[in-house]
Amino acid sequence: MLEIKNLSASIKGKSILDGLNLTVKTGEVAAIMGPNGSGKSTLSYVIAGKPDYEVTSGEVLLNGESILALAPDVRAAKGIFLAFQYPIEIPGVATMTFLKAALNAQRRARGQADLTTPEFMRVVRGAAQGLKVDPEMLKRPLNVGFSGGEKKRMEILQMTLLAPRLGVLDETDSGLDIDALRIVADGVNALRGPDRSFLVITHYQRLLEHITPDVVHVMARGRIVKSGGPELALELERNGYRDYATEAA
Image 1 (cartoon, rainbow, N blue to C red):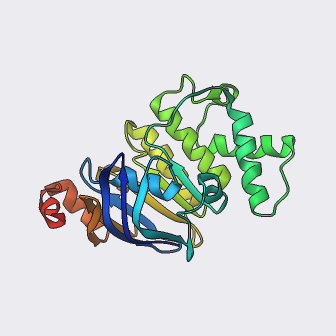
Image 2: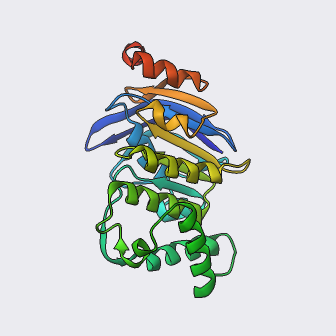
Image 3: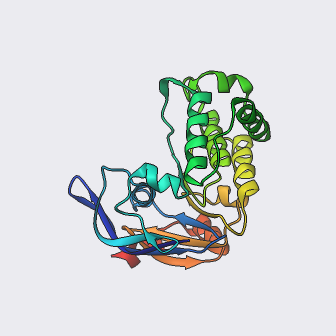
């Protein structure tokens, strides 16, 4: 599904990623854990195509196709979805208008017909109910006045509707209480399947109690320094990252 080879990237002349190698298999849930400043969010932005980041070497392949030269919207049409750590408020953009435009754009990219308004309403209401998204939220501008947990649920609602091939979650658990964390995790788990992969970026093992990964990668100083099974997350919870920071030096 996703193959990253010798990837180095910088922002404003500061090197962040340093020869990173990573493979996420089709149908796999891969977790990336690491200390602050290790480059986890930068990796998610580079995958999604955020323009502020300069790739200085390496390649990123989605199902064997290089995506680094593609615009963010083209990457999204090919099935990449990024759930942000801090979703922004967009005054003046109605949530339902945004969701319908995004969903129909994705459907057109897949060769499918646009949903009619009644069809769209049925799909959104069903998905929102499963994620316990208050219907009143859908009537407001996108993320405006939402709590942190509501914004994260809205991100997962978007992911549910768009049904990406690769879902990248950038510290989606940040700022969530346990109830909101379970709802978000349930939404992710409902999308798991043999044709969809996830890259789950997190600091803490508590998210992985609800989204059990197939593999856990430790990231430090801009590259992967160790990989293992779910038990590796428990080790990090006990011992922290001090044993791995020096390995990347």
